[in-house]
Image (cartoon, rainbow over all chains, first blue to last red; front, side):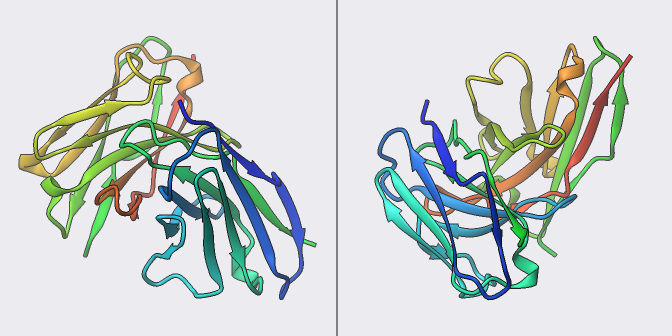
Length: 108
Length: 119
């Protein structure tokens, strides 16, 4: 199975900061990577698919990049609504479609 | 409205059986994969498996193969996740989510079903 490793596991930042989260795959997944945002007590929300495609309705301050085994999610200017946990997910095939361990973005 | 509506919270005892549901509406249910995701208390997301309601093609994560059963009834646009022998370690929130194709990802999520297994 493909392993997905996110870093950091926790990130402290301030409103207006540029934030970058990294996700590494244990083998090449081409561009088959998604990013989700989850707030406490809520279901995850799709932000980015196919490594860099912005899901409809998601603010443009979110962007994704990478291919192969290394990927990043960038928030260009952190907003109060962005404090949440972020997960990457590979979907090289329909199953398994492994998630990363998550990155919690906290208020500094 | 396009939505996935999951069944309500459950409290069960170890060894009992359980089937939770996920009803799709507002879209062509048969034409989209439905995935199931586990989230144990305070932990991250875990992929369990997926089903294509159109032909019931089902694929499991190796971690969950043999532990749960995923099924669907396309006549009532509902997917299911089932256990035959619950354990305390099955205590978690379970989400269903729609997966249009491998060109995208899990784009529509249910609100989750909390399953508590305790003696």
